[in-house]
Image (spheres, rainbow, N blue to C red):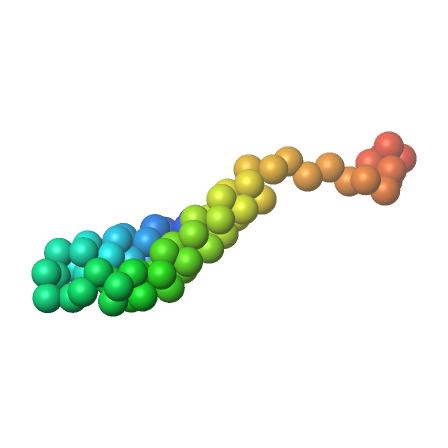
Length: 72
């Protein structure tokens, strides 16, 4: 799971670089910048939520709920 979260982190960094490139490009009109950045922002939001969910799963302690552990 660590490789997955590392991959997400790397992709988030790439998205940040792409967003900064768009912001810094003075030749792109503001409306066009918004249109270009919207899918990047949506992707970033999904990746952040996915990473949080994966870390929650990784750190969660699972306990058998069927009662079989009491029979041992």
